[in-house]
Amino acid sequence: MNYMVCIDDTDMPGTRGTGWLVEDLCNMLAAKKLAVTTAISRHQLFVHKDIPYTSHNSVMGFEMTLVQGTIDGVMALFKKFLETRSEKGSDPGLCVAQLSRPLDGNRLMAFGKAAKQQVLTKSDAYGLAAKTGVHLSEHGGTGQGVVGALAGIGLRLSGNDGRYRGWYHLGRPGDIVSVQALCAYPFVDQLVTVTGEVLSPDTRVMMGSEKTKTVRLDHKQVIVVAPCEADARPGIVFRTITKKEAKQY
Image (cartoon, rainbow, N blue to C red):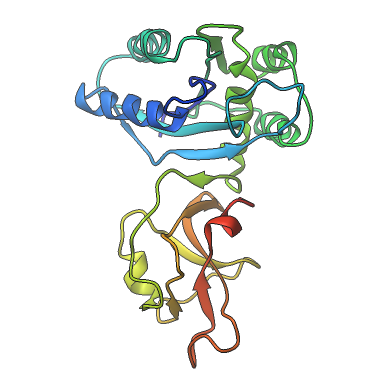
């Protein structure tokens, strides 16, 4: 992939979230045959009274590979899209990092980690963007979304943060499914336990009571499983995690 893109703060209370808008943007890039994009990830940032946010203070990110044209043309599309499609009163920010050149990943990842734990400012974000050479711009309102957009780049670069957009129906609650069958889906790379163990293809797991969420671990799109309750199903050790359990990622 040539570029990583993160967008933050395009919505307002009572409107569709930034994830919907980013999905529309990826669909537009595909329809115009400008770029191929990857699955969208959501990264949770610090929730604090001094940070303006709409609902959960999360940022959305994806990678893209240019198909035709130049990055300048795509950047112009991003600008127009954000300034015309973001909700009135929102503070959208955009960050784009070129992956085909060396990046100061450690500093970007440190910024992302800090944004999950403390209040950061636009000045902090612009200062780091200038030092690391990533594109950072605001497209309405106060532009406060640049903080989250830059943080999202660092978190996605880390490869171990975030939940992928969307929920999947991969079986009925209580169904027993092999890891091999689940990894046959194009959006599942691995099944991993909450302690980090990668399950072998012949392992069987129980589908939980809720739809399945994939998370970003080791730069992969994975399903996380947790130990089954003792009386769940004989011989079945793991179950897919719940919505509440997925929120830690």
